[in-house]
Amino acid sequence: MKKTRLYVGITLLVQAVSFVIMFIILAAKKKSLAAAFLAVAAMEGAAGGYLLWQYRQDEKEYEAQFGEDFLTDEDMDLDDDSLRLFGDDEETVPKDTEASEADFQ
Image (cartoon, rainbow, N blue to C red; front, top):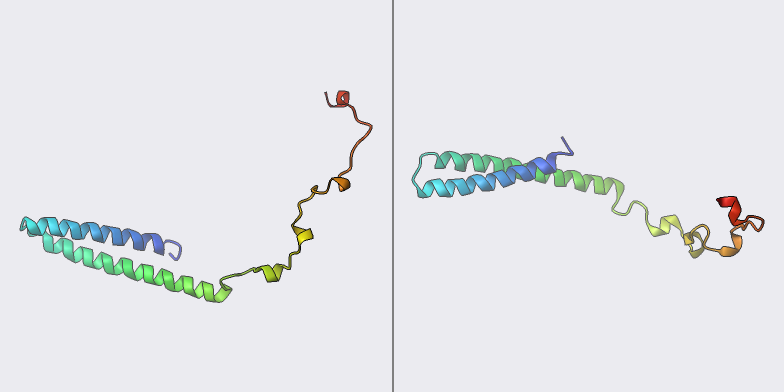
């Protein structure tokens, strides 16, 4: 459920907005279903807002537990020599002087 809180919360809020729009349309026509749409929109909006708030609280908890920068540059202690890719230095690459093009065909 923790992974889906964000998606369900956003879906409920979008559906609540669409129900509010339906309420406005039906209230203008003086239909009796308008109040029902407004009630459902209010419940969905509250549920969606709660799920998003709960998701944010979980994210804050994880951030406090692991820290914002889990591995920083100071922890890794990289220098310029360690950033060089293998084979960048042509002098260290062994070369086969006895091979010919006929060997590769």
